[in-house]
Length: 262
Image (cartoon, rainbow, N blue to C red; front, side):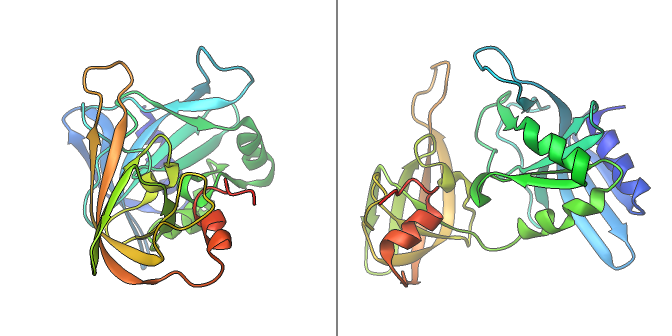
């Protein structure tokens, strides 16, 4: 059985029916469209799933990773009206971990999503655990209790707001173009169409603009093609949605990753 099969089986044991299971690319299970139904509850997912393994060379400690190999050479796929969710099966603890596939979509064909041992052990012990900031969250549950993930999964549908630190930006009266390096401004990878952003400086001390912007489109491009480690930038096309309310420093701290220490 594949890791995707393990995920589907876990939900079925929880009383859900997999009304649709469709592999997107031929025989490979990564990714698979899955419609889970239980009574009036429905989950429309695009599932990627792998085994959880120890972190590889170059890292110390005893944390884990999900190696995101897939059946296509492009970014992790997304589809309208479906959530792309990455699952990791930890067979040593009988635990299932999840991460947001949109946030990790542009990290490379075989990149790693890092999982803390402490979260896996807490899920084994307590039934559920969560770690990381909202823009890069992980959650885990015992495999026999998949319903523990429902709140986390449903939260991924909510509108997101983040502070981003642009490498360049252009503001007009009602629109803005904001270009962000995804390595140095990680909350930006979390933002989708119709989410919202504010623009802060790289020290996260001040706002570069006092507006709140709604994302109308987002495009990711590689700025160093041909190099071993691709560096990606996201270009956001935005429309003005309002103004930042409250103390700017507090808002930046909350929405940017907490790097503002003033």
